[in-house]
Image (cartoon, rainbow, N blue to C red):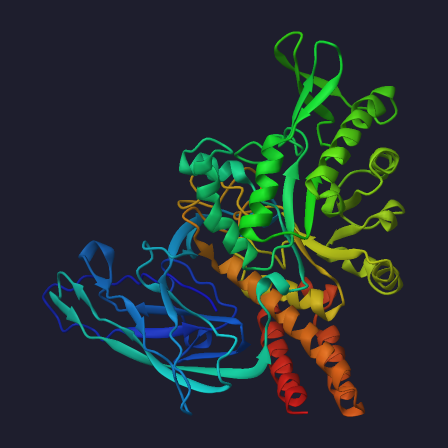
Length: 568
């Protein structure tokens, strides 16, 4: 399930020549080629072969090219069309979607300084500036009949200028879809705990609308619906300005206005917070958790409006000073009362991001004193003594071993969540623009294989100035700041991450089905699946180059268990 832009070069013939035959191939699972590179036989297959459960999304990357499709000659392939996929029986046919793919430039930065190299990667779709790269995608209906469906994928020829002057003939390849017996529920019912941080201000800036206006919410709707369709469980909020001290192109303002009255009393304007949370819950359908960043910002300051001066001023936070409780006590009391009134108290968490234990403990002490119903969320490089007290704990994937085993079992028994994250590190597996796409899917399979609860990533849409041109920002590896593009365009990276979440849901459902069947035979089937997955999806293998092969093998194991358990 990949895309490719391929623009082969050749010397112009001195005279008009016979038009070379066009080519169309399907990229194998872990390939990500770039402008100027032709796919090799080892990287491709000659047919679209898809397999999935009912309710699952399946896709393939397709590359169409001819030696004459060269921009300076005016050559361009025609569009791609997929016929309806007809079943072998008398059931309803299925119609895939076809998209063009857009390119964006990626330079390597920091930990990945040799990987991006400023090349053009076909990543965003729908897109129209990578005429040789296409995606075929199908959401298999939940009520589709299991079986084999077949059709054809056709490139509608194209035209070329000198030295050929003519029309390129169409080319076709077969499409085969195997619909399996299993059924995935709707994304809102997935149990995988997906936490991709949203950035509403990037959308406001790109669409040139006033933040929190009706136009802003209208602009955000398709992006957030796309996120919900990946199974997102968390609404990202900020309690104060720039909790991360300015790491993104667009600021993260506070969703709550802090105001110190002329009488010295604090009050708080929750209108933006209320509008955002209501929108995400009621219109988008993300309702499980509200993560509020943070009581321990990286700059340790709170910005507020001083009514006596009419100016914005700052409180310098110090967990060992009386100012700590003087600042957070009134806020948490008011916040708790407001959340109780809105009916959101038990969904709301105070979120911490890679903060030292002594600061995190100070925050939790204030929460326990003034708003004990609020739980604590924390992303940490690796667990510490404090993190055992955290409701929703996320560790970087390279330290996942430290939360598995007895600690994970203890956390599950308490109803706590334990997830993994990636950010600018590790180098692999990751979701950078230049990452082999199977790495993103590998993450979801790793979560499921090891009994973890989900995945966190710090940036869903924290765009740079022009993400459609280039995915670089600051020191971060290219693509680190966002997974989707303006125009509510998806990406290889986001879709493959979603594929891994679907894989994890399938594994969960197979485990539940084996338990429901309750026979020794069913238990043997699921024990075999679990053991094989645990052997493949390890922290040690995460650092290697076998992600594509690991994902392919996992698909085979899941299909084998599906056939055996649904036949039982």
